[in-house]
Length: 197
Image 1 (cartoon, rainbow, N blue to C red):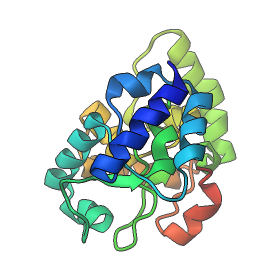
Image 2 (tube, rainbow, N blue to C red):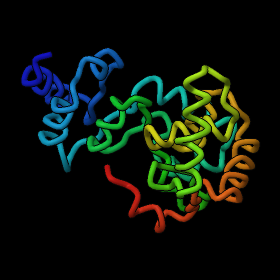
Image 3 (cartoon, rainbow, N blue to C red):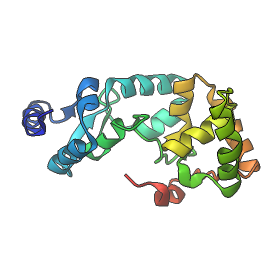
């Protein structure tokens, strides 16, 4: 993809709409270094509309966990779903998504590899790796542990991807904390040191 040409097109789009919109196909065609060039060009003064798949996710979230949705989008034009251009890199990851890690009124359930405690790493390396090698089905907690070892995620995106009830997932998180597999930091102030985007 010609990034200079794309940036020019997006400059025109920004003049017309006041924000940028990237199709799923455009995002899939961009390499990480190209995304960084786009972010650098528009950094500090540009909003981007969430990709269609994320808008669909947030419409689902609005129905299944309205308080979390309101914590994120209250006071915003709920049809816009606009975020900083700096989040563009989050939409080309292995599990592209807008990270839910900055909730104020609701507890956060966002996890990364750094949330996994030594017991969790041991279980991941011994038990889960073996199950994956022999193609054995993973339990809910095991699947979540595996996923956060690969890429940061929140329970809402995880539940949406795997069609899991959110209350069931919250209980699974409690159990993982009890087993000493992970640390759960529900307050946004505690999560800051784990966020690197």
